Amino acid sequence: MAAGPLGWGLAALALLLLALLGGARRLRRRYAAGGARAFAAGWAARADDVRALLVTAHPDDETMFFAPTVLSLVRAGARAAVLCCSAGNYYNQGEIRKKELEQSCLLLGIPASNVTVVDHRDLPDNPALQWDTQLLATFVLKHIEANNINLVVTFDAGGVSGHANHTSLYTALSYLHSERKLPEGCHVLTLESVNLFRKYISILDVPVSCFLSRDALFILTEEEAEQARRAMRCHHSQLLWFRHLYMLFSRYMVINSLRLL
Image: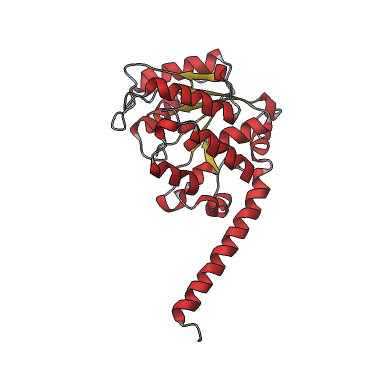
């Protein structure tokens, strides 16, 4: 029986998806090879001169959103540290989540000695609360200066998910940057928030990310993506059913596109 219009349409769609997937995989292999080194070469003598601080709002942010950046920088030889600005105690799981954070970071190549959690009563885990900019900026700047940090990575104004705590980090870093309070030579990269469609097409977003302008692009190899998923699974207390889907489909588990402040 001859295929009808619907059959031909489905076949054409399948071929298109296969072509897109093939192109995405080729670009992935190309960019995953040296994205961190290429970025570092623009402002540091060597990648291992990079002392990077990832500033997050909650335990699991480092993996859910920033795993491509962390793994790419570590692979390139950078020293990476995490400053998590709350214990994630919204459901009274703060102590559990601190331990999960350390386990996750260890799998990402960050030792426990380089992981700091700010557990301050005025910086609570609350999706409806904007944190105080001055207080937050004080904590972040103190950590930057004490550890001679020359690269800070955090959320952009959209916070990826729109979480108020995420966007508070951007506000604090923007304040430090605009007021020229950061040490000389300290750069700030902010993670690009993309639309909902791009957010959940995994590696199919590789061609789009490569085509659009950005200051840094980090893409994981298949092996590193599995490493990121293992790190995410350390956050046992947060692994509700929809987070398993997130690990499968979110481009943030594979791709990070970032812009300099």
